[in-house]
Length: 102
Image: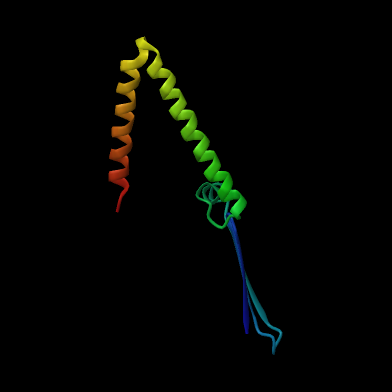
């Protein structure tokens, strides 16, 4: 008696087999495009390479956001509005995080 399980983003396959009798039971669970994109977004059932891609992309987005804020702070005419919008965005983000916490 044995089991082989294969999982990928939006896909899963399980084989239960019995060596003595030669019988097996195959179950395939194939999701649609949205489920594949959701799994890739979360890094679920993805390779370590894909997880590195997610982490590096997130780091680059943080760098881009911080450099954009830094540029806004150097411009006198936009400094106050940039800080106000940043504070509003931080407040909304914290409120959404608090609301989404179980």
